[in-house]
Length: 328
Image 1 (tube, rainbow, N blue to C red):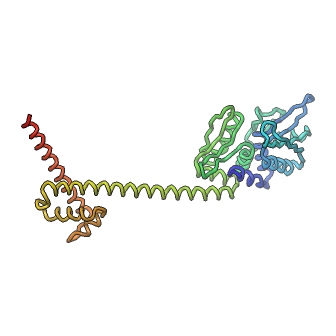
Image 2: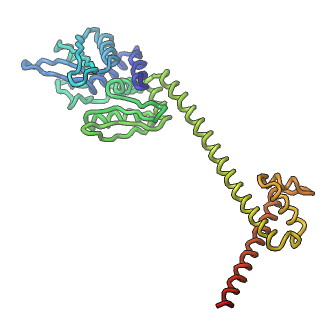
Image 3: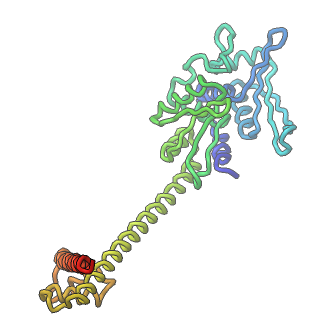
């Protein structure tokens, strides 16, 4: 079972006791996956099609609770996809259809249907609780979520731009940055920030899914934090090893060229320790000296040795260059 289906299964069991919230959720369901048929004698038929049994169940429950009526439900298998089942809920009574459409603000007082079943005004979603219900209904009708183990992605698909913008505005009213992108002939309202998707689950009252997503986020953040620490430590170790290798190369070069007898006592002592303890840190080398010195003191002496080695290399290059000139 997908995470998206888990969320929808949980939301399908959420029935707000307030009638105005039930109407708001119903308006989203009808707007996004409903269809109005006007017969030859100007009578209205309301149909809603969905491949999701949870949406069909929620629609049936809301119609019954809100308007105290039953709908006809037909089930048929999709001819193009053998494993796909289509659920159709139908209301044939003209007066009841008009009553539902007027209550959900999908039709005006003159029985003019909103273009593409768009909500005629925002009265149905003027309360914060109704906005929550509307988002819940919209997600049930045309929404999906990716597996949070892989990526964070929440979306609701609308058939036209005005619907998408209305959904975007409602989501953004909760301080969430929803965006719109076109996908083929559809307009997709989406959110990709993990913390904001958590907020959306809370808004829709999918509290079990919210906890599951939070658990995944915590584990992912812990893994990322550990990986950053490991990478940082590995980089520091690599940097230390490279520095130590350069220091030892410089010290061995000095030893081969002039020996340690030309060095001051402090430089000779640190040079000997560096060769003897190639894997030790500067702090550890400082502790081995008598008397002990700090990390900065050790680093100062090793820098002097490095400068001396570079000077010896330059002198040798000059001598070699001079010899070549004399030969020529």
